[in-house]
Length: 207
Ligand code: TYD
Image (cartoon, helix red, strand yellow):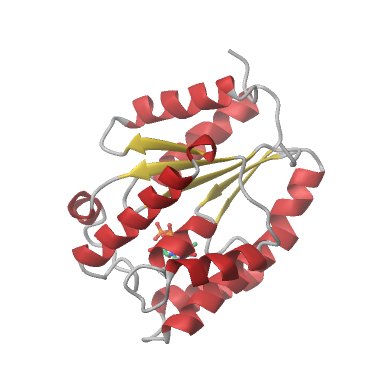
């Protein structure tokens, strides 16, 4: 492990229930006296908040412009929030990270996932999470759960969200030691138990 953290990312489709899990895991680390920095992308910095407004609520934008805006958000985020937190020994838990871009901008957006991955890795200066928790739900279930909310990406059709899901699963499958894939239809408490257990096995949380 190269970071002081750990640095843990939650990934998954819209409506997967990441935010709840981020909260539960943060509380578990805080309970054992750790400083926890919780953050989300896009957003999480002043510049990131402006970028968030552009990419989620703006008009149509070119796929490359979209990919670069998400990358700029991450670059700022890593420099301003994540690296300083890890450097002072905090646990960092992020709601989405580079895989979201690889999955969303790489899926059905005319860009190859490999190209997007290269841009993302450059933008975060090669800082990867120690663990990525992928909460997996299918497109129809995601749509059902986010009924009523429609940012620009959420409003995409189910086949786009299925492509996003396949990209996430492919990333996890290619590097199983750094991923924990959990069925997002499980109860939130059960999902948390699995995440907690993985952190215990890794030595980050006591038994
Ligand atoms: P998120 O903050 O999880 O949404 P919300 O706060 O509405 O629950 O993510 C917003 C959207 O941005 C989501 O549809 C996924 C998308 N996204 C990308 O397309 N690329 C990225 O790099 C990131 C971080 C998010």
